[in-house]
Every structure is written in C-alpha cells, then in structure tokens.
Image 1: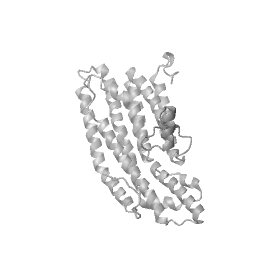
Image 2: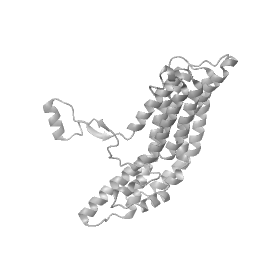
Image 3: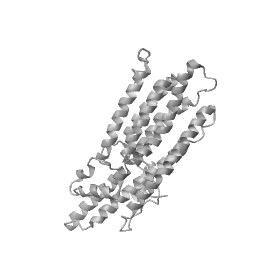
Image 4: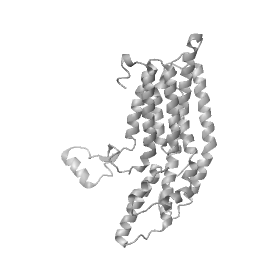
Length: 329
C-alpha cells in the first residue's frame, strides 16, 4: 500500500486492486474461521481487567501488598485479524477519498458491499459490521462534503460516482443481514441435529467440521465436549442424555441469533443517524441517506419474523430448564 501511494504509482486503480485482494483473503478466512478452536493461540490475546469485588482474596492481597492493580486476565480476541484488515481498507478508502477519486471509491465501496453477503452467509455478523463500519467511514465523510447544487456537465460523472459510493456504503450492512437471512434454513433445529449426529464427542476435532457453525454454537459444543469427557473419566461412561447435547447447541444458536439481531439494530441506528454537528451535507445526499434508511427498515421488518420463528423453534429444545437463555425481544 505504501508503494501504491507513492507519486509514481499514484493511480487509484492499484489501490482498488489491493483492496480486492484483501477482501478476497477475508472472504476465504471467514469461511475457515469456525474451524479454529476458540482457545487457539491464532487469536491474539487481549487483557480483560478484573473486578476488585469479584477477584480472589489471594489476588486482592497480592495487589495491595505490591501497590499494583489486579493482574488482568488474558483472553483471546477473535476479531483481531478482521480489525487489522479493516484499518488497511480504511486507509485505502481514505486515500481515494482525499484525491476525490470517486470512480475508484465507488468500485471500492461496491466490492466491500458484495463481500458483506459472504460474511452474513457464514454467520460472521459482528465481523462484517466491524469491517463495513471502519472501512466505510472515509466514504461517508467525504461524500457528505460534496456540493450537488448547480453541477456543471463536466462534473456530472464525478458527482454520479460519489452518489454511487455513498449508496454502496449504505447497502453494506444491509447485505450482512440479507446474507444471514439466505442461510436461515441451515440454522434450523433439524439442520443442527444433522450436524450433531456427525460429531464424535471423543474426538474434539470433529466439532470443527466444515460448514456454517456460528461461534456461539462452537463454544457451546466445546464446553459440552469438556463436560462429557470429564463425565466419562469419572463415571466410566457418558450418562448425560442425548437431548442435552441438542439443548446446549440450540442455546448457542439462540445466543448467536439474539446477538446478531441486536448488533444489526444498533448498526441501523448508527448508520442512518443524523450527521454529526458541523458542515451539513447537501440535500441530495440527505435524501439518499433517508431513502436507504427506509429500505433498511423495510428489509429488517420483513425478515425479522423468520428469525423470530427460528428462535422459538430452538427455545423448544430447552428441556432441562437449568440454564439461562437470552431473553429475546
């Protein structure tokens, strides 16, 4: 990217080619990601600071004796790779926006939008929204600064590309949701039962089979594997009923769907909120923003019923009533 930004390689097309290559890597990665164990050291560690009221007495005594804070817990950051890639994509978009190269900025935004369908189709809602938000920030900021009043004919093409770029960015997070909607059948209780039937609970690797496996479901299966392994070691055999496996996997699915819908609604409110105080965008840009906000609301209202039905079907698997399930709204 540094080479592409040098003056002698200043063409925006090279930057678009770089972004396409990076998006291609991300699409490949997101398909493979659920095959990586949650505790794998592929996921970089980040610090989680402990609560003084919940820390052990030994930890509190040690911190007070040494006049230091509690030693933070190191936990995996499952989205570190996407965050790294998103910052590179953001820098590419910013370089194109600073040059007002709206033709290539439109191509960049379209590539970003079309990639979001892959993220949604593999249950990577959080990752898709993260990338679309960070990478698309320069597009929104630049396009809002454009003046669409009395555009001369010579500027018409450039202005049209600016509107295209803005439109594609508005559609990006909608594509994440639509990608999820297109694979709801693969998240049904029947599909989950078929998935569980192929798991060999004595072999942890079988948990990470190819296919659509949201991370919340994978985490439930990982925990279930540890519990069944302990039970077999203690009792000499697995005593827990088979339906408990379905219950725990369904609980993970409800957690995933609840988290996904909540994130989508939060992003809807953020993406189509009024612009921050400062230079007001032109009325044409405001009108397009409102149009796509209405389109997003229409699509969400249309498809949320299907998600609600799916959640209800999974909640029916809660036979033990021993675990906390999300209070879906």
